[in-house]
Length: 467
Image (cartoon, rainbow, N blue to C red):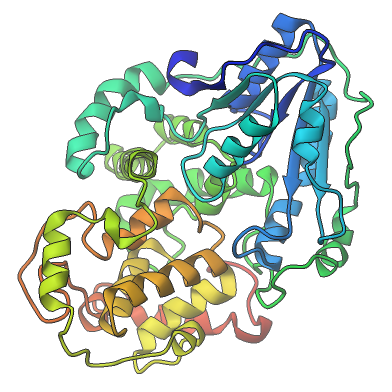
């Protein structure tokens, strides 16, 4: 397991005078089902040391806003409680502005025997990991707890789902298995550590966030609450009430018929392995379970494979050559509509269904996967260039969506341009890229019900999913 999930980034000597093993928790924000935490505990036990778990939240990460900050802060106190019970020292530090202390991880690493952190192939995390290697004189390990099958099981970027699917299915008997939690030997949850620790009550979160130098224009989600408990509550509802009919309801945005777990997966509150095992063992038709596991494992891990092996995952340069060719040939095609970034952000277009999709994204922090595809396709059709379309899609997705800034998000955006897809019949603007319209898509579900549902969220009119 370690051979496939663990990477040694800096082969430096262990600090024999270290006071603890440091686990820098960046993406896998959970005290269980966490391969990185398990590895850190095992290393601490081998060295006869306690474990310190550090989680930080800075004010200057890209797209930092009230919605993302809130979702993270809502999971802190339950982790603090859980780690105290496990005998592990947990620190959470909220850096609110330029005047707050900096270089906290490097400071903690000075007293550490080794450093363990999360292997996440996207957004700011690879840069964080490179930086901590440069700033420390101890071994730094990264551990992959992203998916069911470790990313290292693949040697290159896979072309599409049909190329990665048989490889994943062949590996599932080895990796889709129960998870054994490891206990810390040296119980020391009260260890004195020279590092800021932001302690707060949950009711203080709005006040804390108001003090942060971040974007305050994006309100916390009225629907999705952060933390593992909230994620588990949604998981249980999905498995018991929704999964049995998932194969029939997953493409019905007007229903509560999909998992709605992507935000909890992105922030690491839930493990895809634990979800997969819950689904596998659920009382539901095989076709429902197979349909969901295809999305959770094959499609999701295809996106992680892309961001791991394609350095251009956050640009159009990641697209296949046939897409590049068809875009060159149709770059000058006339667009029927040409909306500004502001009009798109506010949902001010001629298309009522598209406006509703943007409204769900903007007001709730998530958008149903079925209409998310249409959302992206239409932005391509309504902007002056493919590059502008990509820039707007990335910005809106990462600013408003709780599950943005993720391999799945980038793969989804690029899919709208033909990534992981095949050439289709040629037409204006799209060339051979798959085409979708609101008219045809809206006929495949009760689009009027969906539109009316999204309107309920404006001006605080709704705070739940479908009742």
